[in-house]
Image (cartoon, rainbow, N blue to C red; front, side, top):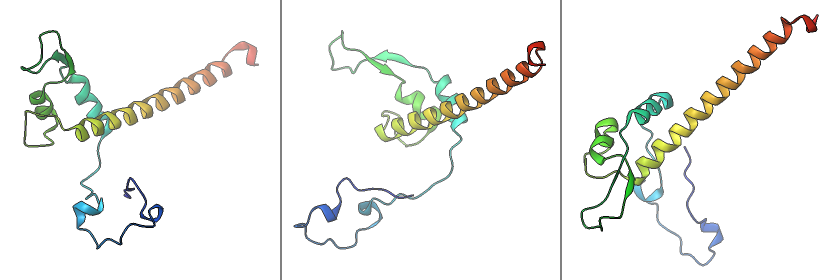
Length: 126
């Protein structure tokens, strides 16, 4: 996996050369494992979603989303069940979009096969 930095060092000719950075500073990501998009999609589909507000916000302010405790129970990405890290929310959303895209492609291919089979079996095709 290759991670691109926000700004190329080549673009900044006046920037001093940097020493080799450690894994966290270099932008390197340690791969953990494959993700089953359909499983994540099913988990998201079962996740309770509600409106809520922070205690310090006025009564008329509302946010929409899962409770952090439900998120933690469903995914367990971090040890804190009081927050949903943005990076995890974005990752889950991206995996769901990919799974839905694959499912649409599968269904489209199936519809195309059924239409072709139906056109072969009709009297007009003979």
